[in-house]
Image (cartoon, rainbow, N blue to C red; front, side, top):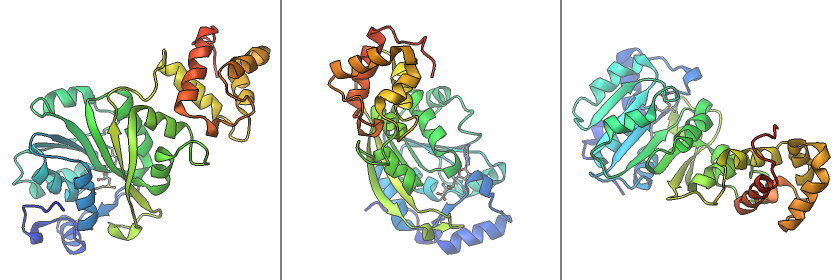
Length: 303
Ligand code: SAM
């Protein structure tokens, strides 16, 4: 197990220290910012171990809070950059991280930051970067989709998120958890649920259970598609109404007049038109999207 170089008394992630820091700075939690701070050393160990860091690597943390995870990252990685939206936390973080010269705190909203520029400025000297964070749950999906769609040069994304969202990301075809989020995540990454986490390891406790998920970025996407945007539109259309068959959902996508041609296209691809979207693999979605483009149902088609 990874242990911090710090004396145990300096670790932020204990109930006692966290309460002391909150009292010292008169900090009050904002539910609207998803502020649930981790107070459990074992969970921190698991997160940091999953990230496979060493002194040649960089870590981007989103939402450092009062620095519980940041401290650990500083002990393991060569460079840590933490982006925090709440300006009340910035002076606290500066104090807590005063002895961590490899760590930089940036005040900002990660959804509005130019991450390509941030990477160029912060991580020019490291051999690889991973995102490691206990994410604010109200913006988990937008944050992860931003990281993936901007095609940032990432090795792993190791994040604490809602358990139910982690299960959807890692779901295989055939179950009710499998949907467009599973396809999007698995297109870019190999997902692995590291552990599930009870709500008792946070202050304050969230209403839901959590999980740590590790997303390892693929060198190239899981399937070859001629037009990514079209592929994702087909996926979304296929899940538009989960009770409907594939042919019904996709007819709504391409227009009623094309229903017959669409049925033929699916059959030609050895895909039964009455299957439901939730049974299709990424490879099957890719085949449909490519054939549709060949048939001229490309970007002109609106959902
Ligand atoms: N990392 C700390 C920990 O594990 O104890 C805090 C995690 S807490 C679940 C989420 C943190 O994300 C909070 O500090 C919150 O202020 C911050 N946050 C919320 N929205 C954000 C955004 N859009 N950009 C950056 N940080 C954000």
